[in-house]
Amino acid sequence: MAAGVIVGEQDMKALHSFVLAVVLSIAALAPVHAQSLVDTDDPRQLALDVYSGINRAAPEATIAVRLQAVVRLFRYRCTRLTDYQVFAQRTNIIDLKVKCSGDTLYGVTVASNGYVTVYGGNGILSGLNRSDGLIYSFDNEGELSGDSSLTVNQAFGETVDRLDLEDEVNVASIVGIVTITFAFILVFTIVWWRAWKFKQTRKPRERMKPMHKHRVGASSSLKDEYLEESKEVVKNVFKHPDGFYIGRGKSGKRRFFKSAMWAKTYAARGWRLFEISAPERSA
Image (cartoon, rainbow, N blue to C red):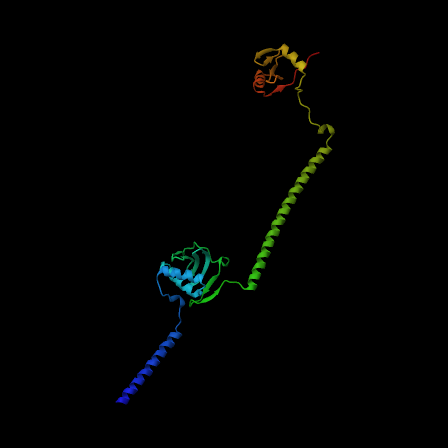
């Protein structure tokens, strides 16, 4: 009996070891989804984990797990997180773009005090841009599959391409400016040359300014004579027997007009409107 009991205990121990080994083997063979392992559903704690993880360079897969949990806690759909990017990092605040499989971008903001918010999912966010920061991509198991960092050769190639494009743009701009300037100078030169040529081909008389139709000026003695022969009809306005009028301005100068109104205007305001030349004396 004792021997049988001893044999039974040994069999039980062996069976227990076998079952444990089988369970561990199955667990080892089963795929582990990193994005399904989150030890809390507190959004404040998740925000602190994401914030400290980014600042302390934690594994990107760990940060991705918590970002996916944060998106889901805000009742947004995120079947599988495929990419995320830190596109703005300020004092105590970090802004991220999160891409979930089959959904448009989400925006996630976390702060050092546990503040967290999720927005987007409706196309209001622009796409992931490598110039804003590194883009981390994850495979179906939630493991990091790569990022958007450039190798030395890639960076050199992009820099050369950018410089070539800028050179082309600069050359085109310079050529355009030079062409427009040259065309303006050419047109101005042609117009000036034609005007100068036309002036030189005219006769001397044609190049002289035309004479005024009336000789307005008259000597002071002639004005005195006309004024003595005239009669003052209004203050500083005189009418000559020949029918014209003489207006005397505030400075004492005398002008000739056909109308009393214009003579009065000159006497009151000094405006020489419709002035006529002094009538000639008959011999």
